[in-house]
Each structure stands twice: as C-alpha cells, then as structure tokens.
Length: 162
Length: 162
DNA sequence: TCTCAGGTGATAATAGTTAGCAAATGGCAG
DNA sequence: CTGCCATTTGCTAACTATTATCACCTGAGA
Image (cartoon, rainbow over all chains, first blue to last red; front, side, top):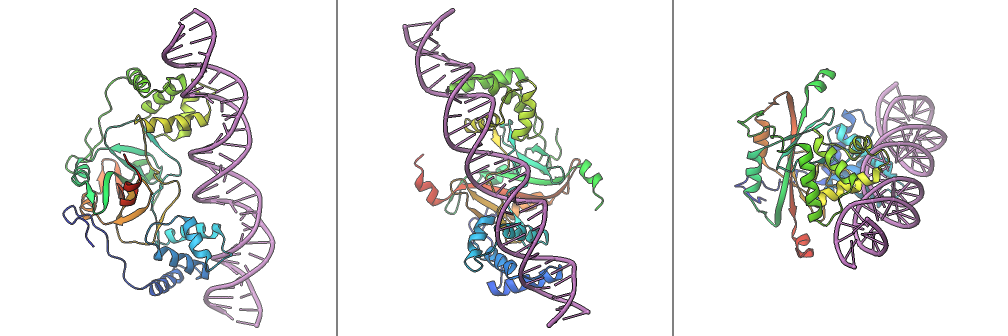
C-alpha cells in the first residue's frame, strides 16, 4: 500500500506466511543456531510477529502473559536480546542507553560509531531535500526527521580483527 | 571540511563566534524566554558548546564540576532539558526511553509519531540508495544507517490545538 | 527414560532520569 | 541599594528500564 511512490517512501508489504508458519520457521532456525525451542520463546516470537507496531519488552510481556501467566519479565528481555543476536529481530531506537545533547542547532544528522558510540555531526542536504519535499505522508503530518549513519571509526576498526 | 560532496554528506562548519560571545548571546536569549541566568546555566551551556562530540548529562556534569564543584547532577539534567525546550540544544538519540523491538527484518526505516511515540515501518528506497552508494565517509567505514521521520498522526493532531 | 547444558523465574542490583522539598538566589520594585 | 518573591538549586528518594545472580527446571539427544 503505497503512501508516496514519488518520494520512494511507502508502507512495506507484510511478510509472507501466516503466523503459525512463521513461528514454525523460526523454531527451525532456532535449532540451526543451537538454541532450544521453548514455549516461552515461541510465545515471545509469536507476539513480536503479530504486533503491528514496535513493542517494548513490557508490551511483549503483557501479550505473552495471557498464555504464560508465570513468565518473567527478565525472560522477555533476555529472549528479545537473543532474537536480535541471531538475527530474528531488530532493536529499533536506542543505540545509546542515555540521552546525548547537542549545542549545534544547524540542521544536521549524525554519524554514530557502532564500536565506541561516539557521535559526529554531518550535513546531508540531499537527505534534507528528500525529507523536506513532502509535508504529508498519507495521514501523517511530517514534522521532521533524522538520519543516523552507522560507521566504524578508524580506531575501532583497528581493535577488532573480524 | 567536505568528506563527500558527491553524496552531499559532509562535516558542517563550526558555528560562528567565540565561546564567550556565544554564551553571552545565550544569556540574552534566556532572559527573552523569561529564564534567570544563573552561573550554573552559563557553565552548562559553555560546556555543551565547547564539546566537540555529543555529551551525556554525566559528561557535562564532569566538565562543569571543575568550575562548580557543588553542582548537582539533577541540575544538569534539568538544565539540559530546559535548553531543549527553549531551543538552545537538541537531544540526540532517544525519542523513546526504552528499546523497541521489530520482527520485520526487511530493510526499512521508521515513522515515529512525536505525540504518541508509536512507530510505523516505512520503506525508503531512495534513502537506501543514497546511503548504500557510499562504503566510506572519510576515515569511517559505513556499516548501515537508519532514517527516522517524525510525524504527527491524525489522532494526535486532533488532541492538540496548536 | 536418563542426563545435563541451557533456559527459566524470582529477586537483587544497576544506570539513567525524574520528583519532592527546603534553602539559596536572580532580578525587579521601590 | 535594599528587600521581596518567584525561580532555581542541591540533596535525597523514587522511579523506570535493564541486567546479573542463582537455584530450580526442562528440551532434546544418547
């Protein structure tokens, strides 16, 4: 369902397969990674796949508790983190655990080193142009945007061999 | 100092004026906003302006303590938040306070409603093209990137009058 | 079925941030 | 200059999100 093909920004299609099949496929990939397939992991994955938005650990916890009333919030945290590690989920927002402040008010974006988490300013006029050319995306009023480019800086590349 | 003019991504010029002048200008704008100008606020603004990277509250705290040994970390948090409110600073990373997880692994970016903080997936091929066309930015190896587009959704627009 | 590495639940600990409140102070009226 | 008072500060406790610890449990291969 396209929102704005001209801009190249649109809602993606929902991934194929019904929920049951996707959870089955997930279970198989768990075993490939040498992970046990537990009812809790299935339930957490099912909740994540069923969610239209981007749930916090606590949201997943609430969803899963209907089926597993005794599950622990710690298990949900651990499992979501595990899913990210084996590439079955992505963590959306916080590369950093704490707020960073910036006194530079000129419009700019950020280069973030995935090793040392240092943040550098960059200007990116072409991004701004793409972003600024559109005031609406479907129902949504565009009020801004920001680009984070993940990099590995020289010193972090030297420290890791892979 | 351009890093990559072709891509339109480069390091921005440092804002004009020396540190003293910029802190003076800041003090004036504080009064315009009806805020007292306290030594603590000046010191925090100076530390923020002097910082090349994007300090956390604690980093600013450490810098300011040299001059104000008795300042409280809570004051630093409060002040940085105040600076953001009057537009003298920007908060870089976390629009959310907690991690969001996403089971959708196809390459995509996010629409974030600044009102309700809901997150929606969007594809943005033109952004990906810009980002993917460049493997290096100066010294930095590009390993990825993400775009967050800030929006106000319909229901949030209805709730706020301004 | 038996075994045990790995997973789970309960709880405590931690990091970052915010709230509450008494004391101190910036900035204006006189 | 002086005094007043709303704002701001520092201290502390509380709170939120997350991680660590550890005894018990269980998935899955022999």
